[in-house]
Length: 327
Ligand code: NAD
Ligand code: LMR
Image 1 (cartoon, rainbow, N blue to C red):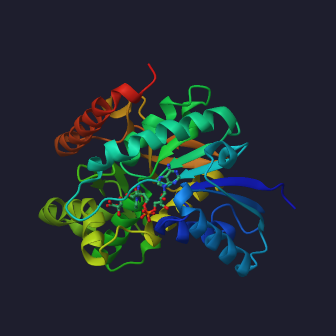
Image 2 (image 1 turned 45 degrees about the vertical axis):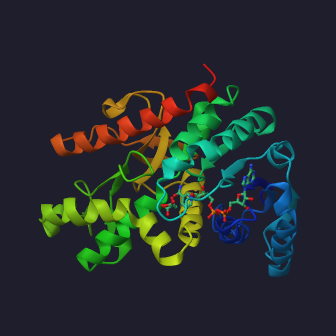
């Protein structure tokens, strides 16, 4: 039997947490042969609800679940953790954009970044889900100078999954037949869902679609605004699909993406002309716990304009929280 892996989930009493922790305990994230210990963090006022989640986890009798710790203390939650999924943050309401949450949530990621820096495993893999996810990841990474920047990522996987599902529907093909879809940039309306390189059953998807108007006026805006459409319909932000995307992101990072491209938001390194110092969604492949960026893709004028829009927005977000970043 493999040694137990320790996984922290913040905001575990919230709606994403309620879906996510059961998927992890079931083995969907790290594999059905990997025993897990869960560290559930939430604010003091949510501790009673968190105990209820713990009771339900026990009642599922998951064979892989070895231990559950509920706490409101970040250092207790993150002590020696192998993986940390930072969900705990306010969600937006109808009429808000995700960056409107910056002021409300930024401080959480300073405190949790410091706690990770102090006590997490030195090879911890961190996924930031709480919005605005890209800039919150930057805040957490900056507060954790003793952890390698490669420990940190933010979630673009929900956008990636939405883009694949919409393309599959348009093509009348199963989702699994589609590969090499990319969602670039910010988890915000400036994101760029890009199927220029996509393959459907191994054939170039753009040859099957050939409808630039649909691409620009329907596909790109609908992927970008899907979170708002869910809020409009449900009255609450997406939860089960967000949890499922977090499971997909971590599973591919840890267990490998089997050669497939996936979209992850990572600390920018100058590739594709994206300046350093922001978290930017890019195409990657994962193998043996490492992330390998897909480089050398052609960027035409339209793509370049879209990427620049996301860069500008992320630089603005960074300027708004610059006082929280360690220089
Ligand atoms: P929710 O309000 O249902 O749950 C949030 C939980 O976080 C609550 O239990 C709250 O008590 C807790 N929390 C608040 N501050 C905390 C802190 N300092 N430490 C630990 N826990 C804390 O919200 P939700 O629907 O689960 O969404 C959580 C976040 O995820 C929101 O910011 C939402 O916008 C974001 N989100 C991101 C994506 C994405 O693709 N990146 C998708 C969906 C939702
Ligand atoms: C989403 O994309 O569904 C989430 O980021 C929630 C939101 O605020 O849109």
